[in-house]
Every structure is written in structure tokens, then in C-alpha cells.
Length: 339
Image 1 (cartoon, rainbow, N blue to C red):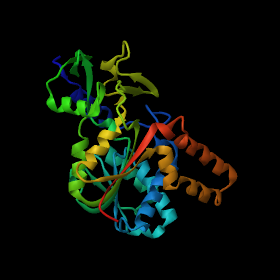
Image 2: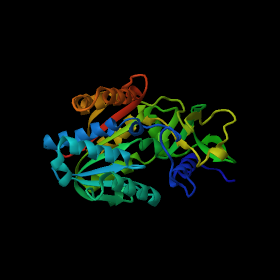
Image 3: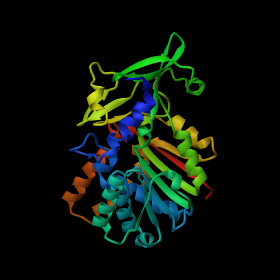
Image 4: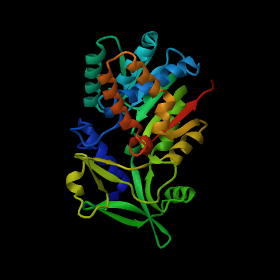
């Protein structure tokens, strides 16, 4: 087997013909990992409240298109719609709803789920890629997509930057002359770890295609690079560091999820460098409280029996726990356009 860039290997692992996302995978108790969406409906509910408040504040109009990128089953957007209807039923008749999804089998899952949830009340639009988004106004949401962008692995040895290749299912490092990669690592003082590919293209595509938008995204990571390898494999709720001894990459390839920590400073710069503002960067805990998750729980408390309220509150604790998702996950908000 000829050696290939780790970034190409990573991309094939997730998106190749037999890649992890090319075939439907379960998320949750029976899947490889949990997400905030699979933990509680109030995650999507809080974002739905953010949509309502953003429209009430006048930043976006009532005929805005709500777009989810990387929706998997469609649970998040459906939860958002459910809570938007609860908070302001009139908006359901004026808003448009769309999902960006490249895989046909997932689009079918999403269509079927929306049919099950809403019948013919919601007209769900599908786009194959963000290149197809041509909108005047949009509220865009993405949960855990940037950790699935392809990346290079880099390592500094004898003051020389090396990057990773894969040969015979083994990761090897060689000195690199990739000037763009060298300059990126120098800018952010990265000596060891992951360098994401595609953030700049993603940001510029949204900015060029949509006149005015708010884009919010949740992911695990930190503002600054950790200068260590975070790349890891998730399989059946077990986590395997990419350099774990005796890790069987050949058998895990395409059959498990591969991911890494998001470098948010890089992501934020990708938007700010093209004139898109970043009004908020904070932990998931602070973001969901900002978006009104406590208010939503109070509404629930006033309308259901105590045992139901306590059950939902326990689920929400998973989202907010400072030692878990609450601090580990971050939210970045981007805005193009003036109030």
C-alpha cells in the first residue's frame, strides 16, 4: 500500500464509499457515542427559543430559513420545530426548514422522521451541500460537525515540522515542506496535534451564499491548541486514542467514528477574517442558559406532573454538568449582517 496523507485517510474513513457516515449509524445507547441531541429534547428546544428570540429582536425576519447542517436522523431540527411551535405557533407557517445532507440514505431517514412527527405540516427542503444554499436570511445550526472535518496530524522533531501519512495501516511522520501548514502552525504555536482542513472554505461559502445569517455550532474542544494529539476513535462507547498501542486501525476503519478536538481560535478566525462577527464563544452550559433552557424547564414544570418534570430535569443535567458536557462542549455564534 502506498502512503497517503492522513487527511485523505481521515476523509475516507468517514466519507468514503464504505466510510462511517456513508452508511446509517445509530447514536445513543445502542450506538458508538452520545450527543447532546440524544441526551435531551431541551437541547434543541433551547436553540428553538434562540430562533424565536432572534426574530423577536429583529435580527432575522419571520420568513427566515432554519438550516441544520449534518442532521443525521433529523432529531435536532425536529426538536427545534416542536419548541418553536410551543413558544410562537404563528412562526411555523412563515419559517422555512432545510437540512444540508449529502447522503441519500440519511435524507430518506430524515424525511420519514419528519413525516412521522409532523405529517404534511412541515415542508422539509434538502440540500446536498452548503454550496447550494442561496438565501436572503438564515438561522443555521450545526452540532458536532467541525470535529468531522478532515485534518492533518503534525509533530515537531528536531525543530522540523513533520506531518502524518498512513502506510500499511500504520501512521508514520515525515518532514513536510507544506508552507501553508508550516505557517499555520507557526501562527497558532502548534508543535503537536491536529490541523483542521476546510474551515476557511466553509466560512466563505456561507458568507458568499447568504445575505444575512446567524450561525451557531456546538462541539468539543478549546479556544487554544492543546499541543497534544486528541485524535481518537469511538466504538461502542469505548474511546481509543489514535496512537494507542496495538490499535487495530484496519478493522476500525469505516466501522467506527474518528474525531478530534476542535481548535476554536482557528474556526473563529476563519469567519472573522472574511468580515463575519463572532459575538459569542462560551461553554455549552453558559450557552444553553443564555438561550433560555431554564425558562423552558419552568414552562414544563407549570404544565406537567412532577415526576415528568424531574425526569426531564435529570436529562438536562447531562447537558449542563460542568464536569461533563457542560464545560467540555463549547458554542460559537457567528453573525453576518446588522441588527
